Image 1 (cartoon, rainbow, N blue to C red):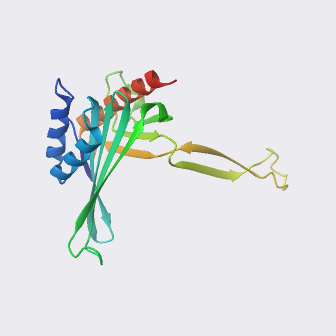
Image 2: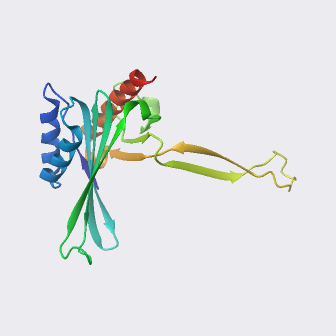
Image 3: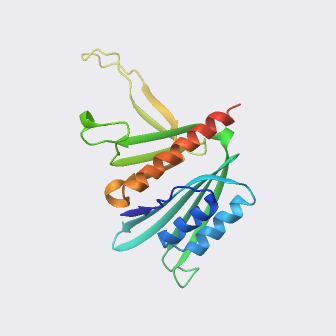
Length: 201
């Protein structure tokens, strides 16, 4: 189950982001301060907030990811909570930021799930959106045995496959997050795609 920011960036985009972080209710002071450090004095262009809860065995664990777009950079901020361990006697959280130059973003992949596609209209809502962004830090390789097309052939043709950048993938669901969250994800993906196109050398 998850919940995501749903505000549309207004004239004060930074304040809209702060409100969405507060609305998520997930350590808002930590998330906002961590992100503010990464943003510095850069102007914020667009953002999306994604809060997800997952079950790890019998334990509920929460995660929050914020994507922030400036004129030059994509900033990813991820906050995770952890149970007590040998180092920390009480539960604790880690907050990580990564800043990527827009010129380094290699791909912005948007996957839409649309029910009853024969009835789809340009302003129709998707039931689910998966936003995948690659900037070369993580690469996913899928291999499978190569064939020559002859079903009777048992020769070794080696392997064929594909390699793709897959640094970050976020899923937004209308059922879990609401239609506005899905719309915000699509809006952010559009902003990022335009920005990376303009930043291309």
